[in-house]
Length: 123
Image 1 (cartoon, rainbow, N blue to C red):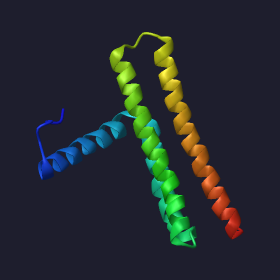
Image 2: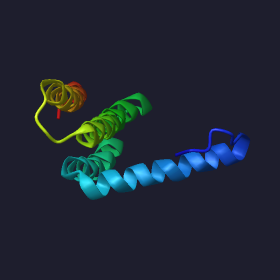
Image 3: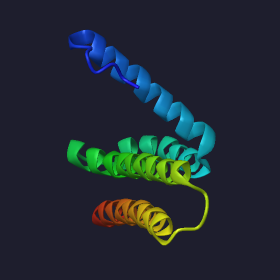
Image 4: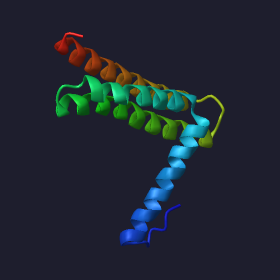
């Protein structure tokens, strides 16, 4: 856990290290995150090529960043729920289902963004 007494640059550096550990853990333990990273790796060059304006490029790439962000949060929720207990509990299942719904919504939004921009371009 982060040292709550750290200030300034040391606190920022600690935050970067903990973020790295978070990315690493998610990569190692979450297949969905690995798949979404691969999707991001494929779509980012496409977004930079297909986007006419800076705003279009940002929307295309940003929609995929949103998917990764929501997946990270969902993975955190799932890890906490599993830490509390692996036995079936209605609230645990609900929490995991809501996290899954959030990931699904981010993917739908990314698809809507891509389709809308590509249709406007006539592709």
